Image 1 (cartoon, helix red, strand yellow):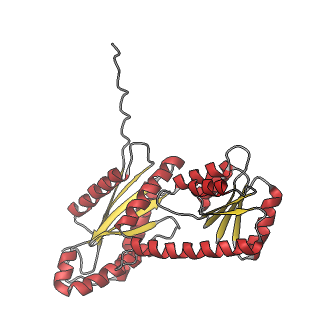
Image 2: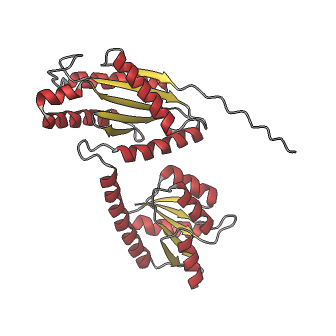
Image 3: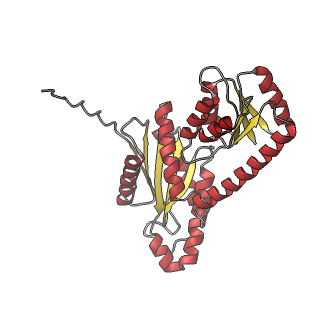
Length: 312
């Protein structure tokens, strides 16, 4: 696992680092609250070892902040403290911790605790994968897409970076099913899903099955010109695949139509607005003859004027 060690004492961090590396874990270190929260957000460790008593914000405060950063997630937090009273254990668990060890922790006990947390983490990952994966295409399902889109919009707003949302679907898919049957249709969707997944080369790019023959792609850090280049490569992949389509009104092979919307989100941009804009672009692609991608730039909405309050 990747373990984040948070402790203001350099010697303590060094000792824990040596123990953890000997166990085969990767180690991140932080000496205070700001650095701990920054690494927790950016590096996404598998487990946190957190000292309770630190200058400034203590470990209990840090744990509560970490929990607020992942409302739908769960990263195990083990407190390390010289405090040994029952109330200290209770306060640690109440703050969001999952276990509590009294310093100096025995290497054998620490290893056993980490083994338990590792098993729980792996079990949770399997459950999450099952609940967030489309069984036909193995892409993210709609639930996972909705969660990830909201997260990436918030991240892009915070970092003032661009984001692109793509909605696309298989042209004349009902005709495809009518001609070749639903099993062939399923194989077609699996093939398209594999291409979309292959096109998402960067770690944060996401391909999802939006519903039926419709797919969605989230491309963080991608401006409008980058989205156009992405769409061109995707069109080339589908064309090279040459999946036969006996009843398409566009071509004799399977084609895609897509709508793309790009922006640097401000406080007026949310998931619903991006989806509506991408859907509008997708409709335009179909109206223009299908087998193409239409791209739009989301316009900024003016901030509402502050309401005047008259006090009588």
